[in-house]
Structures are given as C-alpha cells and as structure tokens.
Image (cartoon, rainbow, N blue to C red; front, side):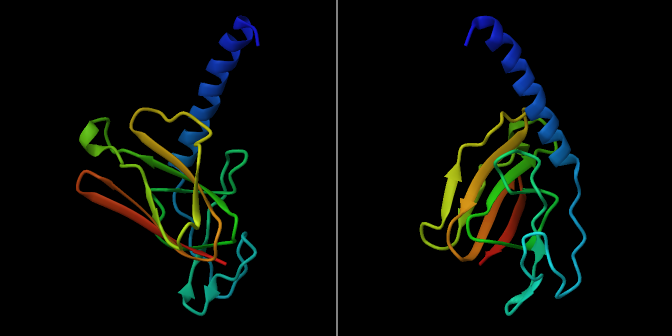
Length: 154
C-alpha cells in the first residue's frame, strides 16, 4: 500500500466508522414484539423462561446485532451471534465514560472480538460472539449509572 493510498484510506475509515457509531447511538430501543411473534433472529419472542426481544441489527459489516445504552431487558439470539456494544457517555468527562462491558454467562461461551472501528471520544465500543447456548449478561457503568442487558442464546 502506498503512502498516498494510506492517506486516503485512513480518513475514509474514520469518517465511515464515525457515521456508523453516530447512527447506532442515535437509535432508540425497539418496541417489544407481542408474545409469541417471530423475531429477526428466527426465534420466538416468548420462551419457557419468559418473553425476550429481538436484538437490533448491526450496521457494521461482520457483526450480526448491536446494542446501545438505550436498550435494556432481555433479548434473544442464536448460538454464534456476534453483538456490537456501543455506549456513549452523557458528557466528555472521564468520570462519565462507560467502562469496558463485562460479559458473564456460560463458561467459555463468550468470545471477545476486535472492535472493527475506532470510537469517538466518550464512546465505548466492544464486540462479542456468543458461542454457547445459555443466558449472558452484558454490564457496564458510567459514573453512578449502571447498564445491563440479558441475552438468551439458543
């Protein structure tokens, strides 16, 4: 790759990643589907352990689904689903920035992926692939605020 190509490619990548992050952080949460209705993940939104919502789609190539701090509750997915997590701080102060999301769930069932984009200042980005069936919990904190979602994978 020539230096001229690198100069063109890097700003384009940063601008593209910025557009994706802004689009994801601007989205609100989806309304919950009615119990028993099909979801985009191919799973019913109601299971033996209660209702769950379909994960919002990701706009980033190579990642299936995405969540932001606007999402909360329980979501459904399938084994092998990759999830992009984008958390935008309410202000630029270091105290209000979100911590790196922590994934808990089935032993060795979550594979951390390299985030495919560079985050804007004040935005925390992580990516994870869920490789085993079970219930996972994604958590993070920002100052005195906590965030979490549950992901039911089958």
